[in-house]
Every structure is written in C-alpha cells, then in structure tokens.
Amino acid sequence: MTLTPQVSVVIPVYNEGEAIVACLERILRDVLMPAEVLIVHDMPEDTTVPFAHSVAARDPRVRAVLNTYGRGPANAIRFGVDVARAPVAVVTMADGSDDPRQIEDLARLVERGVVVAAASRYMPGGQQVGGPRFKRLLSKGAGRTLHLFARVGTRDATNSFKAYSTAFVRQVGIESKTGFEIGIELTAKAARLRLPVAELPTIWLDRQLGESRFDIGRFMPSYLRWYWFAFGRRLTVEQMAKRPASSAARSDAQAARAHFEDHSQPASPANRS
Image (cartoon, rainbow, N blue to C red; front, side):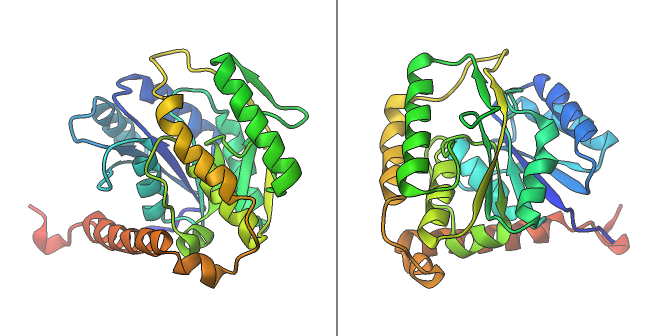
C-alpha cells in the first residue's frame, strides 16, 4: 500500500536535460517529510524525461508525469497541482532560482491553516538576485500595491514559489492557461474569499543555465486580469465556484485526477509479464 505524501512538489519542465538531476538531488536532500516530486512535462520526447526517470529509479518519490492540458508552464503547473496526492502542493522551478530548503517551511504554513503560503522576495529578509530590471520593478510594484490596498497577505503575489492547500484549489479551480500567472490567480482568489495567506522571506536567484521563457508582453494581460480581480468585493466559496471558468477548471481537474489515478495504479500480479 502506497502512503499518501504530506507534500506534493510540482516542477514544470521544458527540455531541462541533465540539469534536472541537480535540481532533484537538492530537493530530495532537503525535503524530509513524506513527499512526491512531480516532474510535469508537455511531451514524451522532452529531454528532461530520461534524466527524471534515472533519478526515479533510485528514489520512488520522483515521478515524471505527462501534462494533458496543453503546452506551456501554466498548463503544466495546473496539471501538477490538480493531480497532486498530498494535502499541500508546492510549486517550484527547475532552474535553481528557488531555495528547496524552504519547501517544508511553506508546506507547514499551509498545514497550520493558510490556503496560500508565499515565498516573498519583497518582505524584510527577502531578496532578488539578478533578473531583468524592468520585470523586477513591475513585480515588486504589483506585490506592494496588492499587499497595501487589496490586503492579499503577501508582498510577492507574482512569485511562483508558493504552497497551496489542495482542498482550497479544488474548491476554486485554476483558470490560468498562460505563463506563470497561477501564483497571482490563487492569491487573488484567497483575498476575495477572505481566506488566510502567509509569507516567509526568500532569496531568489536568477537562473544560471538556459534562458528564461518569461515573455512580459505576452503574459502581461493575464497578470493584469488577476491583479484587478484581487480588488473586488468579498465572495463566498459558492459564488467563486459558480463562475463559469472556475466550474470548467474544476471539471477538468476531476477528469485529470480520475485518469491519472487509473493509470498510476501498479499492475496486478495476473497482468504482470
């Protein structure tokens, strides 16, 4: 019998190749609570997959899972969170920008009752090292104004390095399908529902290998949509769930979980060759 993990670590990947090995080794070393680590890829031929399988052969906590929602980081993150088996899902990047030692701290905040726990670059003790200056200014400005005026509970709503209550996510659904907007979407939804959000300081390092696929011009409209959404009147869970996009997202998630669970079961002895 497979035990339910305490935390699901969701890592969207795109042709990371052998670099994923060092990322996974850091996570597996630093996360001591029962965990599953989901390497979510968009296509079977992704160069990350064979290296993820090599690590999984040594450590059963690791699984490479194929995203069936469509290509792109938002769909990969959404799929990973939707099929997560743990009560807490932590989204982190494969490029080494996030500190894996904080995964457990974020997860424990959710265990204590918050629905979103954010790793914050912009609170006292936090820092961002590197990255495009214009992107950094936009992110910092959005985080501070949302914290001051929309009372979202974190100064870094746009950071993807967050932990989520999977029960909360399954109530409200994930609608984002572009870029890395899921972090601000779920933070904004928690704010509208007046549910608790917490943060802890983090030091974010710009990726050292490969190139960032963040396109400000293409992703900005989606970020602005959720930025303004955070300022709306209070909603109930029922009102949030009745929104057509939220309802559709929850239906997708239910179907994905059912399919994923069916195909994740070990073969019975009679069917093994």
